[in-house]
Figure 1: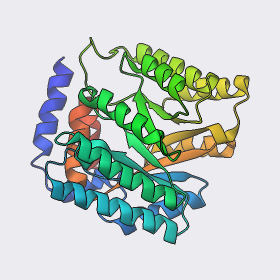
Figure 2 (figure 1 turned 30 degrees about the horizontal axis):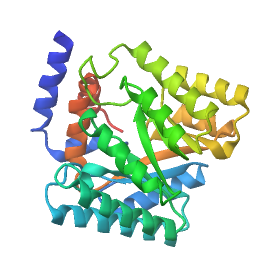
Figure 3 (figure 1 turned 180 degrees about the vertical axis):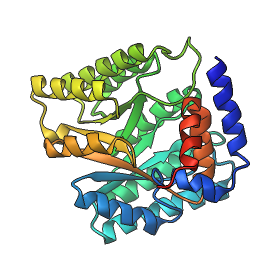
Figure 4 (figure 1 turned 60 degrees about the vertical axis):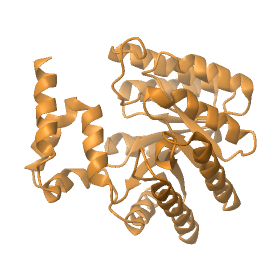
Length: 303
């Protein structure tokens, strides 16, 4: 408890640290401020044998103008990926597309974006946010997959409901899912708190997706225990490489990333970029207070 309070105090203090200092830490995990920064990173990753997914930073848009700007930048991103012949798709947070103030408009914008991606032979991953929007996010995914094969969603093993959500999605139709632990701080009634319970949930969800015929499964983790379990499950079930991929964040666990690629596993790296990188960094800190001390140490270490 004392450590948690200390970390939250550090997070509050970081709000007043000059952005260039915070950038010293963040630049390892964020491609940059503009699209060309992201495309350059994706090219490097492709040359290393990695696929990628680009995320335009931004959440909780509160105006139609902000939604349009985000949509237009994603369209530009899709064009940039195609022009550079990159092995890369896009990941989108629905709150950036107006989910919290106009669900119908958000669905309409996503339909246009997925259509554009389909016409370019690309794919859209709908990111999962906090538990307040889990149901509506899955509902929008359900609507879109009725018309499109190039759309997927995310489930978080931290949430108690996720195994049932996956079971229902698999029964209803072709399902493309990324499974991750989840970073949002949720109440105990909604989410597992114990790390071992979160791991067990992850393993159960992955087993269900692979056994029950998910079209493709994104195994998003840097946890060596979960990676080992996933490899074992893939081997025992003889899962083809076109039905799964490991996924990792930019700048995280690069030794594990390299090992998986060398073993022949498909792997995708999550590449965020955008002018809102500072707000993104602060939000991630608020959701993960235990890493605040690590970040503060890195502010004063030469990279």
